[in-house]
Length: 545
Image 1 (cartoon, rainbow, N blue to C red):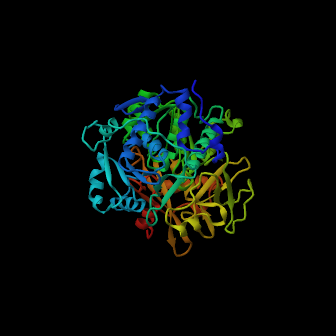
Image 2 (image 1 turned 90 degrees about the horizontal axis):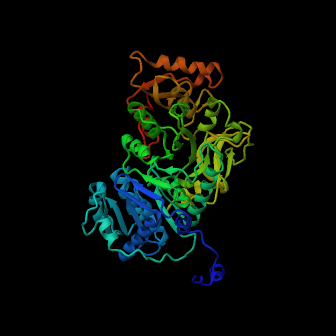
Image 3 (image 1 turned 135 degrees about the horizontal axis):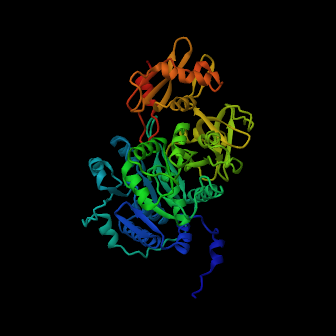
């Protein structure tokens, strides 16, 4: 056996840095032949993943990429994207994951702001990006990705085949920036959010621990088969590809999302663990109901917006384990997960729904507080509502090039989430609303999330969103936008919604002031680029109703 060179010298120069490359040690040692699947296009092992990571780094270096340079990626969820998750930061460069659902103007802004040297772009997005290239002065190389294995001189697979796999990934400071992406820009221009190697590694370890600690419910373990249904451009697909890779589980990447394609992959590859926003889960349940696809034994973490009780119940009826997680772009993203306490596992399922739809308990290493306006902490279990603020070792230091917004984000030494909620005696966080969305009517606070959840419990309602509209007498009043199921009665109207909500007034779950006077029945609800309700558009469109 060959000797290892001077292990103590590394410690004398700063110890063992927490670098993204270290996440590959376990799978390459313990599961090198495990599969990574991309649709019906690619199927290879972790051993091949490591080889291709080396090839990609060699390719980028040949195009002049050095430490601290930025490389931007526009692709569907694929094995290629997973290779980029590792190769780019492992060589000391910065991975920019570009939100392909933004408007062309916003995409151009994020690329100009980030200043990438190389663009790795799927052929599907060339029509959007090509007109921008003359003004993207930082870009010196464009490499084309596609699923057709084309052999052009600028094609990803052609260039990968020409690039040796023996790139040497050196150690460097764990505080080196690893990734950069931009918030969805529902208010103003998108803001650049960035994370270091240390932050991503610590987030990976904490999420792995949190999801391995439960004995059964919501547990993510080495026997699972993982498929993301949150775009890889969005907060590193919630960081779960890093977790799945470190664990060495089978991974399945679906490309562009279609309900039929996702369910076909899930069935064929035996997927058991995923994550998505409520909109996607709703779409999958509808598709499965229409086609008779079996969803049993599928664990799905839902985040991005409030998880309705009715959606949890529908998931349970289909044999799924559905529960909430919570975070935001600025938090990498996970800070809580709604795993059931062991004492709840044998309870009637209906009794666990409020816990599954709550945003859960804080992950290890997370300091989560509920505070009043002056940053005075609210006592846990008091039931008092306040703003959610948080500290953890993986939260973004701020917004790229925006010191004022960064200071506002971190005022008082905690990251301000902009959400309000409570933490109960058992440590479960429940979000009441966004600060900007909470409704004050007649001196009482009304939670739009709570109203949306209750409206969605009506058997003829598919989806609902609630916003506040100005009112001369009460200051504000809640207004509901409701999407009915295709099977809803023809005569269904606002009175049905109001009668349904008055039941919950009678049980004390909401006040009578929370029952909306205005309900619009719509075909669909406006959404952001990552599937959240776009209440900014709703207020603009219906605010004077």
